[in-house]
Image 1 (cartoon, one colour):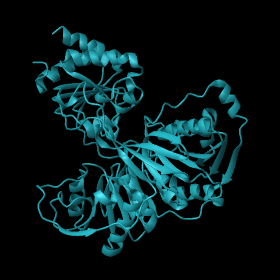
Image 2 (cartoon, chains in turn green, brown):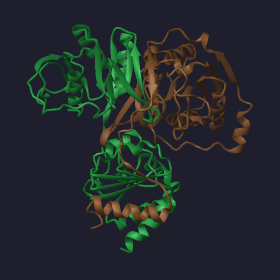
Image 3 (tube, chains in turn blue, green):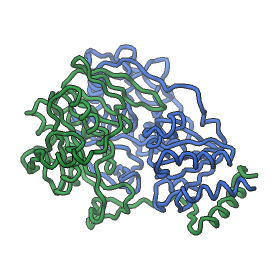
Image 4 (tube, helix red, strand yellow):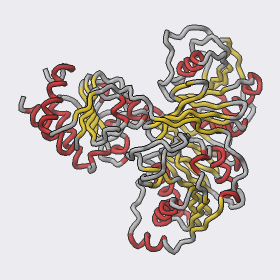
Length: 292
Length: 256
């Protein structure tokens, strides 16, 4: 079952709403939930089949007549939600991080800003940022199950999953991670970051742009589409702190950021933000640590 | 083959943002502008498809006069022609209206493939591509990190969470939204920048293409309270290093 289902339940609780759930999955794996689950069997309607999932969901929406339809802001949710929003001519607000005065709040410009959004359609579609809403207590409940089936076929064909190569470094086991972000400037400077990691007896990691540029291997990537880590110490070097990166490291025990931008979003999670050019600062820091 | 790539001009995300007078958006004064990063991958893939399959590649961009600078980069990367939808108020529009403008343009053009970025760096609603495809009645797939066109069919890889990808096939005409890392966007060479100056860049007033109104608006835009509460250290590098080492000794077991 896709993670995040409890985020959705938590949101409904927070806004004091009755809810029902549409789930593409199997009856052997149902969430702990007090409402009705309209279950479409994933074996028949497909792992990724937006046409069919949309049709089924629209049927349920027609039945339940909700005020809001909420999804996780995930590769599944941001793909399906606009299809539903378009069919219903319902305004969609994406990546909601809060709900204040009856209005969804979303991040703007890499989370440097926020905005409250007012939708003027009868129904609203929301996608929720992962982890922005969580249940205060452990989930409980057994859902009422209603099975639904697909008549439609889709235009889009799912042809299997590809998994990341195993092997190489396992960042989830490292006590200290020193990560390189775009601020390192060029691939040669990975050595500076790796040097500090070594001095601290840890591993070096990387943000997405560094891996996309092939300056570091994918198994060193920290973030939503890489590893989620929670080491004793995380040092973010030249990393601005995009939401997807923060999601992968914000649970680290102690976070140090080294950045020339005092306002970089990484500052939101950092225990210490060192305002400095990493190319000058890190070698000095590494030398002092090695001399200890 | 007829290809469309839709791009957006956004501010550099390292900019110091200010809230505008009405509190409804960020102030556009004193910002450095660039192509939305996701759209760079879209343009590159569109150019690669044109190089492979032949045909014509149009770049479309909605916004005020300054967006033409960004469009010229797309032309220099290899787009054949540009359509500038002139709109000083594009920042006020919602995903529905932006998508409807694109669909209105595309509906008479028989594009085989439409490329967009999966989201914009400023608003990040991640809706426009799919909304446009739904309006046009063509299949769409989001978040692609791989793209192959072969035998009249598109095979893409969708990036999912946790390092997993999904392989997906779809027929043309179709729309795909591009994720970072899909390819390596080329730097326009000087000869191509010069050639781009001669390429057709048509301006269309937005009123010609806008058939719907926005269904949502920004009620207020603001800076979040900094809940960070972290310590900010500034100063001379040697001293900063000493301070940080002391903090690591006090607060963590790492330098014990």
